[in-house]
Each structure stands twice: as structure tokens, then as C-alpha cells.
Image 1 (cartoon, rainbow, N blue to C red):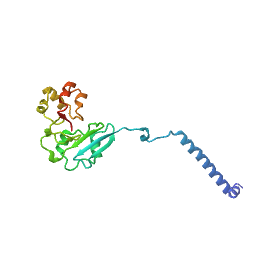
Image 2: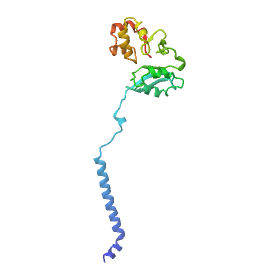
Image 3: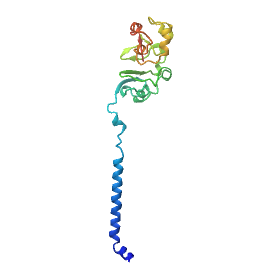
Length: 193
């Protein structure tokens, strides 16, 4: 008799069981969504990431002014400019360019070409539209060249060399390598690139 009953009501029983399974599944699935906290992408949490502008020129693939995140490194600015060109002065890059140095807004980054080799103290390049030929580059100058500046002796020249590289000449003040009066005397004679 039970077999006959199941045979006669097979379709309604099957539909009822399927409905129960779907209802239980729906209740279970809706309960999971309510229990989980909403996840937001990290980018939406940082609403106003500060950008800075950096001028990258010389022996790079795409010279220009680039916007990078605040606290970016020289390496990131070079990457934004398409990397070093094949005729970049690799000796200069390996000796004087600190790829891990942080950039500041308005920084100028000049990468010399191989034909600009010469003595590193010959002040190759242009900084902020100003010819640097008459100025001493504090990132590449020798001890003797630094001592030729008014108020710079062997101890201060050594301190300048030890603090390299510099992003701006004002780093001499910020890092307390020079006092304000000495800096004021030499600021028109020095440059950074």
C-alpha cells in the first residue's frame, strides 16, 4: 500500500521536497550574507593620496614632468619616465644616484648621457633652467672643491661628502651639516643635480 501511495503521489511529493530544499537553502544563504562584514577595496579608504610633481630629464626614455605619490623614490620617477635610455651614463648612475632616495614636490632629476662623462665635478647638466657650469655640485664635488668655498674647511667638506646624496642645497641646513650663516655665504655657488 505504501508503494502504491508513493507511486500515485510521486510528482507532488518530489516537488514538495524540492521546495523545502530551496527554502532552507535560501534561508541559509541569506544568513551568510548578513553575517559577513562589507569589504571595501583599499583604494577607497585612501581618498586623497597626495601627489607630487617631479621633472625627469636627460638620458631617460620619456623625459617630462610626472606626478608620483608623495614619499616616492627616485627609482619610481625613473620608471615613470620609461627607465634609463641606452645612452645613459651608467658610471654616474652607479656612483652618484641613490635610487632609494625620497623625492619632494618640484624635484628636478637629470640623468647625464654617456658623452657627458668627464670629471664628475665638471657640473654637467642644467638645473631649473640655470646653467650649472660655474657652480659646485655638492653631490659630486671633491674634498678640495668643497674646501674652495668660503667658510668650508676640511671638517665641513668631509661632513658634506658623508651626507650625500642631496635632493636640494637646503638639505645642508635641514641635515644640520652647515649653519645658516655659512649656508647663506655659499648658496649661490653650489648646486644639486
